Image (cartoon, rainbow, N blue to C red; front, side, top):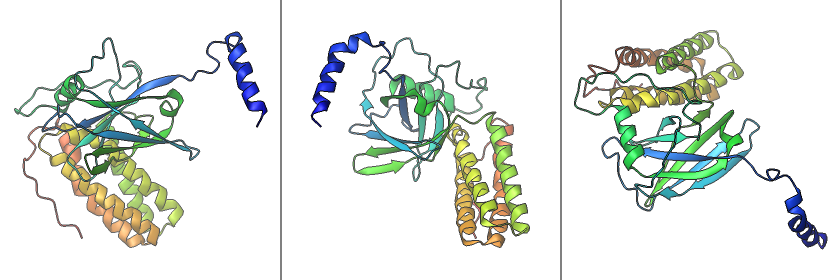
Length: 289
């Protein structure tokens, strides 16, 4: 339109009269770390990360996060720990830092005494944060400060990997509390399936179960033996089968699969309760029916 250039010129001339922060949006530096226990300080040349954030109203936004070179100084920062999720189809994990201050984020539990030579999850994280590369972008704070879901996609050379879903705000309580909620969700699914509940009752519960299992990824990352993550991934596979059974209206299958998860979940709860000590190094997964 002909009036647009004129309006732009007027804004340029009188912009100094407007409040200084009227057209500014508060942003945060959001960071993504690829967590590789075997090589925490890997260089990740030519890698890029994409963050997709979806709001409760269904609106989504996509952000490209460029790679920040290894060793880039970050003086004086006091960032809260990020949320950790698995990188599907790999042995890697992803940490999403939403730019909160340490006071706003959930504090970490005290470091436990090590009984093995393998580094703890916290030690690996500290090494990644000090010496590794990361992906960063300034993102509007309102997109990551309330309720949201997000996924991370990382492209390494010609290969693309996607993360499990992040949910904001971060889960309340400890990982042990999350495991208890998983147990409650499995019991509720089994009970509702026995009552021949309908799709609208079962489907949301199946989604909740998957989200809770996603939240346990931090414990999988922390366990150097891989036993916890093996159990978690097995339960996630069952949860996806449960979700599919809900779509098909197969209540008997929902009941069966919910019950099958029980032993694996008990094993995870035991590992959490004893501080992930004395974990078998070569666990064998049970057969999936």
